Image (cartoon, rainbow, N blue to C red; front, side, top):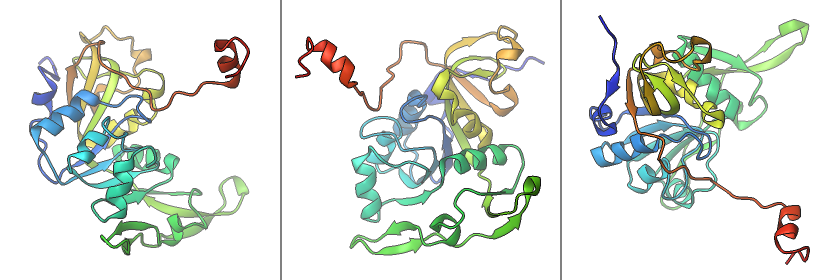
Length: 267
């Protein structure tokens, strides 16, 4: 029996995401944001969402559009800058936040998709990540009403080098939303450059992974050696085409480039 995981539209692919669902969402900064799927979730109406992603987009783009609409109840992230609405909601008690070191977050997602319940890591030892006390929720007056709990810390000596390690539980979510450059009807995915950062582990963590791709090809058209994420982790795939908007989080001009552009005056 042929396996065809393709869906006709992003709206159809996300139609069954319910209120209160947990989502793992790929992307690094604004690179690799599954914008068409995010927009479809916005239009579909699901709310009270618990989202795991490296960051929460920016005001008006990426996960920022769901945040601004009041659809996100909790974020699990490693970086929460560049988003004024995020800061406002967090500091006024409208949003719960679980801050997690970036590499730890990626491994928690990968481990969840690999059937690993928990692991020990050096990251966070000696900080509030391990010792507890990180503010997770404030009230409207700015008081901390929920803080992170202490985690188990044990000593190990990998390679004969002793050290302390903190226990981190893996992450498994109801759904995952990711963007890929190319995919086939069996769900095999190829990512482009920085979009490969968090997208594979996010996809692995979702019980139902939904992928949007710029190009959908027939099974067998992608060289197996070029596959970044096997189709076993992907349940739904939708083609959004190559002509989609891709925003840049920040543009930086070097001093040398600025001098050249102004004829050497630097003005």
